[in-house]
Image (cartoon, rainbow, N blue to C red; front, side, top):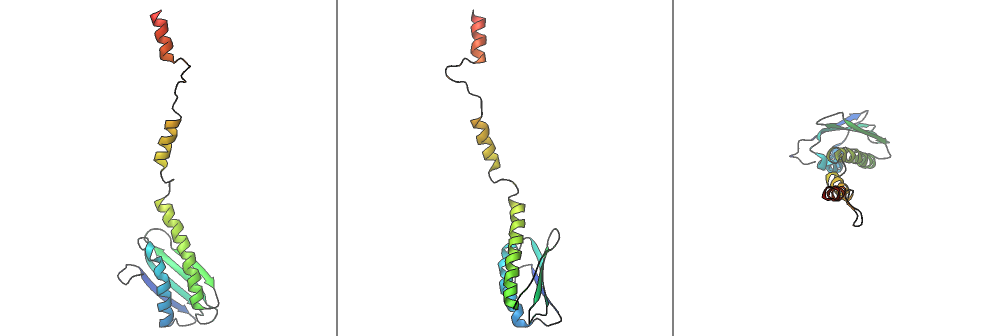
Length: 139
């Protein structure tokens, strides 16, 4: 996340304090979510017992819709943050793909190609309806 971006990062510690160093590390990891900045407004990092066997919850608030949540418990704060950012990135990528590519890419061209290939064409040895009508009128 860039300092000039609109996305705020908030740190909350339950039963423990999240140090400045932990916050800097988490901010660096959360920078990977910056490419989804057009969807996000705020990110909350809630850590329970941040220093030993932390249970961390990552809550990403969206401009539209419900917030996305990833939660995990790990051996260390930095490792758990890494796992959570991976999980959240997968959730946001899926949402982004759903919003931008909700239809089959190139569906219009594919339908036109299929319609072109299925147009009824007369075989060279078959007589068309128009030819049959002309013959009967000429006789």
